[in-house]
Image (tube, rainbow, N blue to C red; front, top):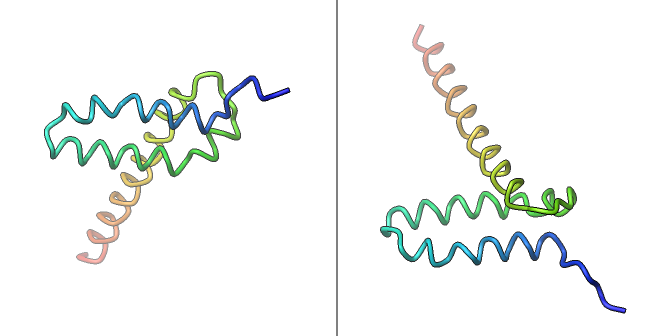
Amino acid sequence: MGRTIKPVSWLTQAKLNELKKFVKALRSQDADIFEGIQAKVKKHIDAINYANPLNPGELMQWAVMLEFYKELFKLKNDVDRCLQSKR
């Protein structure tokens, strides 16, 4: 007997593939940014797969938000360090 449920990593990749037409319709600058967002999702495919959700789209959004918050906190820390060094 074969597998009846597709692996979550396949479903995640299928979601990303569904967005290709959307990316094509974007301006080139926006498409470049969106591809960066997709790369952030791909960084967390293993975690999404481990969670084994019925709908990986929601966890894809959380993965992107996690990456943006990491960048935000890094920038905040850099600014704080810069301000402290000027004192």
